[in-house]
Every structure is written in structure tokens, then in C-alpha cells.
Image (cartoon, rainbow, N blue to C red):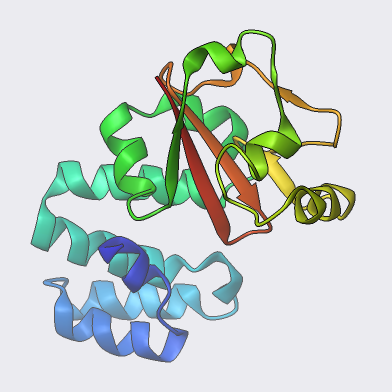
Length: 178
């Protein structure tokens, strides 16, 4: 969250903050800002600001984890990357995301996606809402879009116990299978 805060600053604020909140020398700061001009879409200035401030406040290891978490959340390869992070990083990325527990045995024959979205977890209010979301192609399991016929199976578990459900870009839910 800390790293993400700095990453989400505007270009104007980032140019101001990098001068105030980092220990970079004046020439380095000027080079970063001028290199960012015309390349704003890459968020190079914000990335450097976030990296410098996070490293100063939380240390190099925490900054590395934050960069990894940010990459997973916002990359096109999130479906593959999600399996490459440790459990602590997974839990810190999705801290505060609602969670429901199911029996791991429910995945043996596959758990119907509609049941997973509604009655088993309460993530969505009803089976009808789940069907609508699936028809809109707005449902993902572990960052992979799924259709109405999808069954969640044990092979989908992250770290042998988590399933990440998502509706749209912002609504997430975790199933803990025990």
C-alpha cells in the first residue's frame, strides 16, 4: 500500500516529492524528471520515487516485495506470476480482501463457479448476479477469465489453499480451502 501510494501520484506531485522525500542528488533528480517527459505513460518518475521512499522507510527487502506485488496486481502475466510468490507476500497483497472458508474436499469433483461466487462464499449476492457477471465476462479465477461452465478444482489452489475470485478490476474475494 505504501509503495502503491507513491506509484499513484500525479506527474506534477511526483516531480515535487522526489526532491523532498528522497536523498538523490540534484543532477540525478533532474535526469529522472527530464527522462520522464514525453514518457509519462511508463510512470518511470513515480516508480523511482516509490522505490526510493519505500527503500528508505521499509528497507530493500520490503521494497522488492512491494515491487513484486505491484507487478502481479497490474501485469498481463498476473495469472502465471501469482503462483511464484510466497504465501506471506500473497497475504500482504490481498490484505483486507474479504475471505470465506470452504472444505478442500468440495474441490475434488470441481466446485461450480456460480456456487463459488454466490452461495458458498457470499462474494456476489445471488446466483443470478453470478450468471450476469459471467455473461459480462467480468469474472476471473486467479486472474484468468472464466465462463459459466467453469469448475474450480484443487489444481487451481494457490499455495495449496487459496483461490482468488475477481469481478471486474477492483472487486476481489479469496476462498480459503481447508
